[in-house]
Image 1: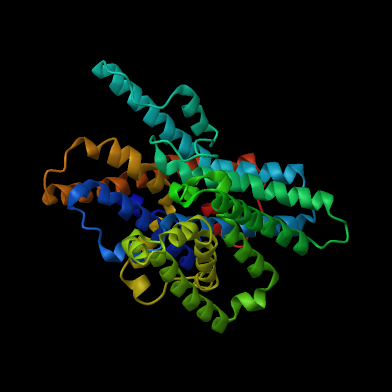
Image 2 (image 1 turned 120 degrees about the horizontal axis):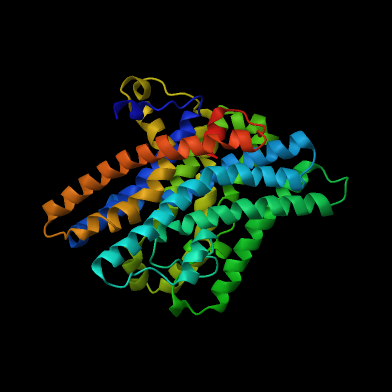
Length: 407
């Protein structure tokens, strides 16, 4: 078991590993509070943390965007074969793990129902099929079963939508249009189009209907990864700006400040103050509309700095911190799939939280199981299956192994 926690990482960008590790640790930390039940006091600092899933979206967009741009520029075109190769490589990375966990959860629920003689609590067959097609939250909020898959559906449809828009623009736009302009048009088309959809829907829907669950619905979040893609665009076409140390530092400071402000102003911890001040409708409208581009852009602002943080030095390297961060980054997808429904809901929630001590014991077990099982899943299934894509698809132009492993 010990050697598993020293998994080979190859050449990676340490700053991007920090972002990915931070994202999954925030997500798992939030899910860990489920074990505490009424003994969770809603720690104030939790509300200052950025949204881990939104951080994943932006980072995924940055990596995927870089691959798309380099593929487009290297080949001078974007056609059917390139589209198919792009999707094949993405699906080898995401689908096997997802289908394994999804099918296992369904099988376990059916087995438990058979043993107990009771009817299972799974959604109807038609709803379950949607999970295999990433349609479970396409136009409505995700059902109670395996609810964390809402973000995976958004990412998968984003991986489909952006390349299709790029292909359409490359095909339809005049030949005199440079590829740089076509790429920017594709990115802005998705960002502006999705924001307009949210804005119009927010205006036409009564405030009494609440936030409308926009955060977790595919059609209202197709721009989720596009802010990271926009950052990849800047990196590729404006390298001097991207690599300037002063620019990186200033953007990182501005990005961190905006992340804190955006996260806090959207937090439920200050909801009562909105109500007391009589501006609750403004809060709801903000959560329906401007929150999403603000959090996406603020996270994109820190990417130049994190992308420039190539290796771990000093205390990061000496005390094993870098090794831990890289390991968490490597197993982050497996952690996301396993931590909530398979470990917390299916297993740990079978044991009642009768006291704060029991709750914290469950939290400790939860973290231990998540780290161990995710490491095993990554080492013995996710990584070997992902490596198959090198034999099943054409290698994409890339700068570092980091982008091959993580995208």
